[in-house]
Length: 216
Image 1 (cartoon, rainbow, N blue to C red):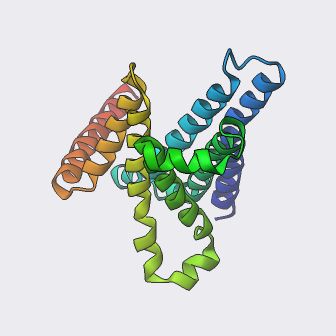
Image 2: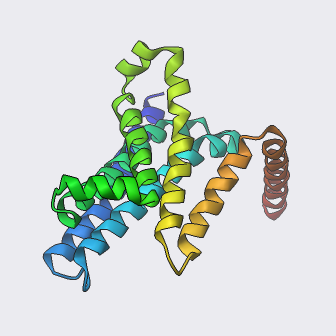
């Protein structure tokens, strides 16, 4: 038990440091003036990309756990979710402060007249609610309502992917990839698709075990 707890603690520390790497790279590039011709746009895109990537990684934890049976994956879900919110918060701060100079009139116009910003803010507000209620204390207070609330992570994922798709005007490859990943995660929630994936994964695992035993 002690060894398992120690391994989980080490894993959490490594994950914590790994999730900090994009921020450190951004800070390095900013200090060395290597963010390109439009530094604000570079900060916006990088922070938004990492927020979306970590949100999708968070949503992938439960399907991976069900496919593999690795219950320990759940120990890392909250940290990934909090980091997803952190980069989303950084994305919003860069937009409000550096891009719009805290001009609330311009920001209000953007939210009303630009659908990709409207849906992006909606995704952020959902992530904010999820981050505030992510503690064990809030889990106890909300009881059974906590799980219902945190199902909204999928809505945040949908809004975030749509935000990216509507933002892009030419090259849809990257947002298209994120949309495909999100679609697969949503399909996994449909019972028939989930069972099929579990069957395929089980067959693959059996083959791996047979090959491994033969090679020995």
